[in-house]
Image (cartoon, rainbow, N blue to C red; front, top):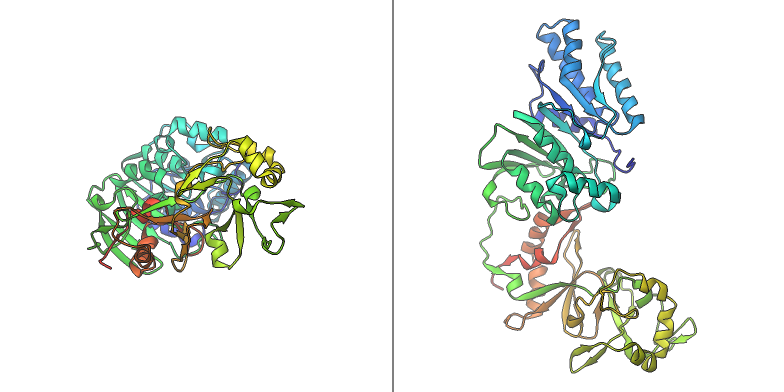
Length: 471
């Protein structure tokens, strides 16, 4: 069982989820599902509202008990939380003198359940697990069963949303508290396509810490199978802003802005944005916390050949002023990267070769390119860019966009590299101004995948797709 995702919905968001689909009155006979109910935080309020409304409508206690048993459904895979949920619901019922209710709450995995019911309401806060946190066997099962999980690195909640949508009746309503990243991740596109048609509103809590430190920013998505308008109401709860967005304007990543860009120049038409070199085992190649000049390039009593040692940089090391170096196991001739044979490497650079043998087992076990020799970087990506002037930018943006200028000999090993296209007509200094502009920062905030705090993650494609004004 995944313990990381057992973070239950705070009470104020429970009310928001229910109010968003008008689960407030005339509830008798309407079926509701909460498919990852935990201890019952949401279902407790559902039951309380249901009973109060049924009493108000004049139903007898016997009728209310029957209604609770046939109208309210839940799933919880964890036995401990399932039992706690039942206890909590019994306590609510006893407050109204309604004993001995046979709750339709199941101690099962909802995603692989086969109860054939169409619901009027599906409310929930599904488990927050990204792809790396899902065990491999479950990944396979989810890929087999759900369209939104077929490609790439999906989040666990994709399957919950997809299955829920198939179980709503023709006028059913749906409200879910989910990670805001579903609008921005590359592999979330199938899910976005699936929800777009009947999506009514998005309530974005992007600057609020709903789950007391959980590394995620949340949104409530509201769908209604009877809704077919071509706009979505977007509500920025944090900044108290609300406006409609045309569905046709939502393409690959969904950007929520009431302002349309009037810029026409695309950054990627003038500059190339690439990943940095990938050693796949930095511990062997990156040399930290040592002054190579002072110690004459000697580490672990092994003298390293100076010609293969280059200045190394990451956004983090530059931000904190740390001096680092990297072993660059290639030759550069006439501006081109030349690979060595293992014999040539051993004969010309015995010191570095002996040093790397300290990590040989780890280097051999890397998931490296097939053509990669054990002493080379694990990927050949970006090797052709290292001998050029370049800019370096982090993939994580928080309060400001930091852009660093690097020299030809400098080797960036983390972040994204910006180099000038041959027919650009614009210099790297112009690129730096563009990336440090307020327009770019606002763009990043709108398109980046939200992380903890105020941070967002961006990709090389995000940067290349930015359109800018005349400089």
